[in-house]
Image (tube, rainbow, N blue to C red; front, side, top):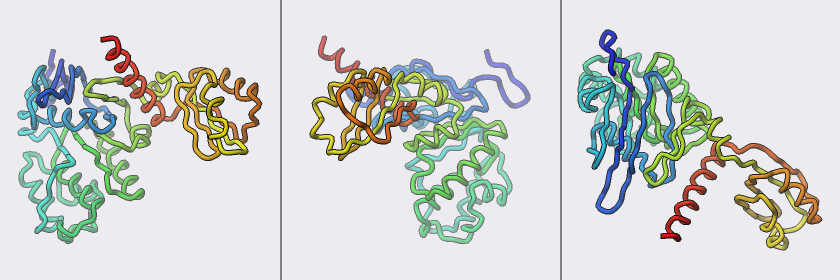
Length: 317
C-alpha cells in the first residue's frame, strides 16, 4: 500500500517486480525483483555484461521491460521524472560542447520544475572553478562532475549514477563522494553502478551483485564478505612457485589459487586446514597472511561460484 505524506509517499523509491529484458535471444536482465527504500545509498555491482546499465535504463523509463513491472515512488517512472523527482547521470549522457559550464548548469536548472540556486548546484558538484570554461575543453573527470551538476540541478528524491567517477582523479573522487554523502544525509535515495568496489564498500548501505542479468546478492558489504564463506591466504616462497605448482594446487580447501613469481594467493574454504597442509608439505612460507576477503575478492568468489554452478547445470542437461 502507498501512503501519501505531503507531496511524498511511503512507497519504495524503486520497485522492480519480475523484470526481464531481452535483446533477441539474449536476456540482459532475467527475472529481477528489487526494492530500494527511500533514503538508502545502494551500490550496483557486476562484471561487464551483467545487466547493470540495462537495469538503470529500465528504472529510468528509457527502456521497457520484456516482462514484469517497474515503479518509482509507486508510479510510472516517466511520471516521477517529469515531476523532477529523479536526477540521472548516465555513461551515455551528452553535454553541449559549445557552451560554458555555467550556461550548461543554467539550462538544466531552467528545465527543472524545482531548481536549486545556481551557486548551490556548483558547490555540491565541486565545479565553482569551472563555471566560465567551455564544456568542449573539459577533461574526462571534469565532464563527469558537470554531468553530476546537471543531475542535481533541482530538488530530487532519487539520484541514479552509472559509473559516476570514471575519469576522476583520487582527489576528485573523494570530493564527489563527500557530496554524495551530503545528498544521502538530506534523505535522498542514491543508486550507483560502479567498477570501483572500494567505493561500494565505503559508501553504500546496501550492495547488489548482478551477474548474467540475475541478482546474486543483496546485503551490506560486510554480509557479502561473510557470505562468500572464504578466507584469503597469501605468502611468498624462496623459489619460483611454478616449481611447486602441482603440490600447491593439491592443497586442501582451495577454492581458487593464483601463482605469480614467488607469490601464492589462495581463497580457501578452510584456511586452518590449508595452512597446516602448507607446512606439512615442507614449505616455509614468508610473510604468511590469513584474512577475511575484501569486497572485491568476495565479489569475485560469488560470481565465480555462480559460473561454476551454471556450468554444472549445463553439463547435466
